[in-house]
Length: 235
Length: 291
Image 1 (cartoon, helix red, strand yellow):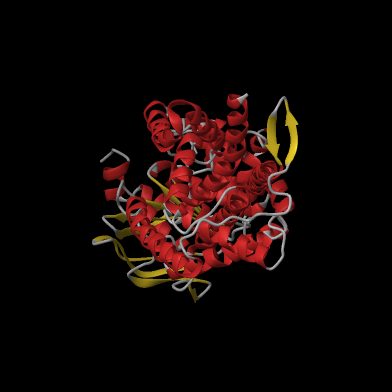
Image 2 (cartoon, chains in turn green, yellow):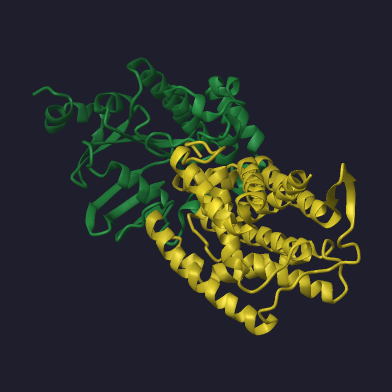
């Protein structure tokens, strides 16, 4: 469904990605793991159009996204949850969700999407009138994911959904991600929590210093020598 | 009685200060453009009102038309100059828009002098000078009361627009986090443009009201930009109620200055107020740090 081919990306003069290629198929749940600063977030930003690559291309169903601005890419079916959730704290929970359905197509089926999201995250319905700034860390992450689902995405990009959450909550969030994936949304998940991510997903890419250095099934990568040494703290 | 009358005049002009400031505040809040030519937009609104009046249109009835004129002019300014600065970092945006704004303000001032002469002008309607009512000898001039009411209506309308409509919510979201707004599918370039032209339209209405209740001249812009800046800081960014109250505070302070220490100290007192608020409560009287 989504294919990256030889992506180079820069922040001003600093090169962040070097020839990154990866592929996520329809219905898959794929993880992109790697250490801090490896280029995980940058890869997601390139897919969602927030950062345009300096060379290489992103294809959605074979169609290049090079000319599409970020706000259009949302309408094409790719929705990103930014690192830290970045919910609109000054707006209510409901307003946040409504904005997730900003695009014309998504807006038409807004009420239906809202029911769907409330079904996955019942807590959000209880809190819908509250200012988003009053939510707890876990609820914020649910809102961020719920908001991204309001655009009825085909592909959901998740940037560190476990960041800063207690282990129990991380497990909950991961369960919900699996649930979302089962309902037909393709997911590309960026995680520093390598073990949990690899256990969760069918397939994963390992990125280091802006380059993809490994790819395989989650289980295979768990036994991948360098992954074990680098991220799991065992030799 | 003199004090009470001053107080009333202060409140009435204060509403207009709020209206003049809310456009600047909206534009700055959304785009981080500090448009110092905002006062010139008021000036143009004043002359637009004057032109409609010369064609026999009542100045209050021509307000929507004036707003449309200024929206179109705002569109032109944005297309010509301001959209080029959208991609800059926040601090570069402020610096560059300051420079561009000063340039625009000089050009508009001089063009206005060329076309309209440097004379003080005002719109004198048949009902000018009449009092709507008089309480204990304190006059409420009909024109100024109407101006106040219209300013209030505009502010309430803007408030409702930002709170209730999809587009308004998109504007508030963009103020908070433009990147998160972008991944919602919001075209923030459009939001910037929208905020800019609404700001221009509101400035136009404020300017036309100044022409009715007070007077206009080509060089009035700087004074009004200053007033708008002071009120924006007083009220706090992002709070329309705050901007309105900020306007009232400034209006009342200035009019009381007329009694003591004297009218010639008005600007000094206003700027002192500005500094005191900046030092003691930098987020403004009503602003929150969260925005």
